[in-house]
Amino acid sequence: MCRCILGEISNMAAHNFLWSLTKNCFTFGLIGLTVSDRYASIVPVRGSSMSPTFNPTTDSFMGSLSDDHVLMEKFCLQKYKFSHGDVIVFCSPSNHKEKHVKRIIGLPGDWIGTPMTNDVVKVPNGHCWVEGDNPSSSLDSRSFGPIPLGLVKGRVTHILWPPQRVRHVERKNHQNRHSPS
Amino acid sequence: MRRWGLLAKEALTQTLTFARFFCLFHVTNHYLWSPTLVFGPSMLPTLNLTGDVILAEYVSHRVGRLGPGDIVFVRSPVDPNKIVTKRIVGVEGDRVTYFKPRNGDSCHTVVVPKGHVWIQGDNLYASRDSRQFGPVPYGLIEGKAFFRQVWPPNSFGSLG
Image 1: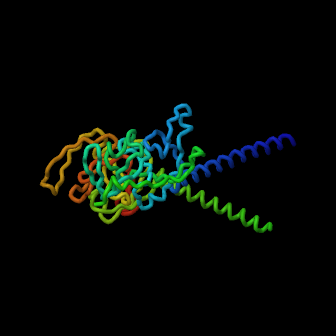
Image 2 (image 1 turned 90 degrees about the horizontal axis):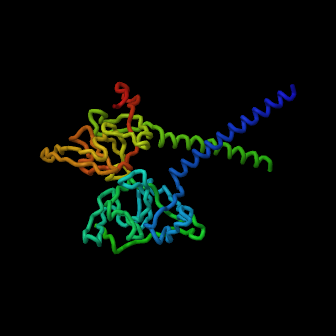
Image 3 (image 1 turned 180 degrees about the vertical axis):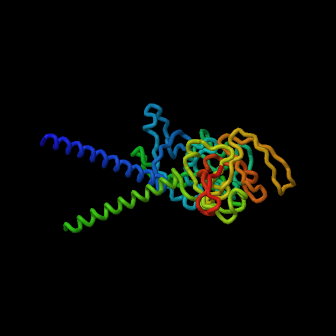
């Protein structure tokens, strides 16, 4: 009978342990999701459209392990206030499931000169003009036009991986590309 | 010394409980459903001028089950700090015909590009929608309206 009781107690202990483990996992999952939605999260950068700022070398041997991982902050989404030269993450206007990383060149009201077509475009209200740092391999506003600011999901502030490239992402102002209205 | 230890443990437990509730609140309000107050003349007669409390759900637009006829909440392409309530008239690939009542009743037809939707208010005479700012990228959709709540009490019921 002692062994029976011992068996039951150890069963209950295991059951309690599993239950509290599940509860803890659920809690930390919720907390992680909330923090990554409201404050900051870490995203990998694929592709070379932002060379040399991100992914300066294309290392196909290592694959996605050598991609830059950056810290994206969400505090800028409180008022949607951005500055020229900010690096932002936004949903692609032609496919809402894809996210792109580019730099803001023009804010609402700016006139942007496109050297390719000798055209001058005014950025409408509530939109912004984004371009990659590597113009030769970047799909950006030069193809799909200005994007609504509501598509922006965060602003990139630091590179966190690989360890030898940990640094603050600088704001690069392209004074020669835009002029205020 | 022991008292400080106990106090610290108590504070940690309380903080964890508070964090748990706050995160549950956030996840429910962003991924499941939440009550929203809407007002304005652009969706008359479906929605009131002075305000309706509507239950908005955030599941349909993530799984892509939105179609023409749904009332959706969209972050305005003209001002990202505002969320507008309109009805989806066409999705990508649809051919939409619309007219602007104030511009001499001229009729226009447009094909909605890939990844965009065409939204219009039910009250065409007092609504600023895709007829003014063009088709809206799908990524701007924040949620779908699906139930009118307790206020005003005589119009309790589901919305199409």
